[in-house]
Length: 232
Image 1 (tube, rainbow, N blue to C red):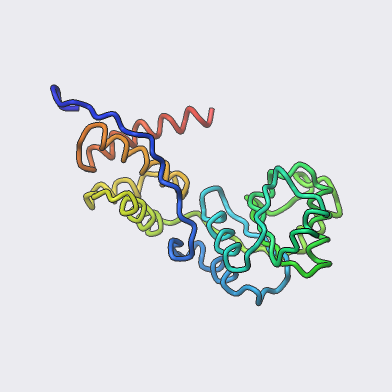
Image 2 (image 1 turned 45 degrees about the vertical axis):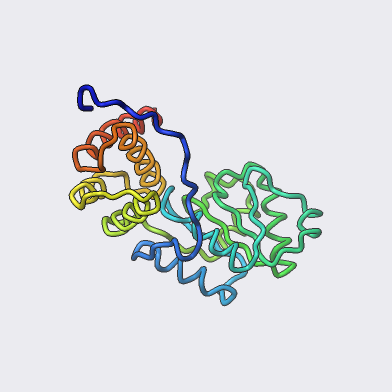
């Protein structure tokens, strides 16, 4: 910070991520998954699973699916009773991050209910289901039966496009060298991109500086330390 220059206290006004179809950026890593979501209801099965690492766009694709078919979005930590599903009578169900589901019996009954009532289900998971992670054999069989579409880690071009969009959403001007610097060094995750742009926005406002490569490097160093602390 330049000596004698006042620091502005940044307001904590988080920008909510937008999960509409127009906000999704197609790339080689996600094109197969996007094509499958957009094919609905012409699916090979009524129950499908998106497989991919954290921050690769699974939640965004589930949101697109939910909007297309007015799907019921279900919290994996709070699976509804079958009576609630009967009352809701949804055409589709979206369940993000089924790796977090603890009540395997409830998930098994939900999937059977969906199959019997011809309800479309789109789920997401970090990995393909294995016996080491799914203890209920009937559920493991049901999950393995569902077609799976894998999403890869975002490549350099996608990261650069995502970062550019996030900066535009915040009405921030970023110099091309700064954008390239960040895209090459940031963790390959859309979640990391959102968090970093928010941090850079706050720092630029606090220091009353434009988003330059030097400021991006400064925030990148602090961001890397913070990420390492969270992982410990």
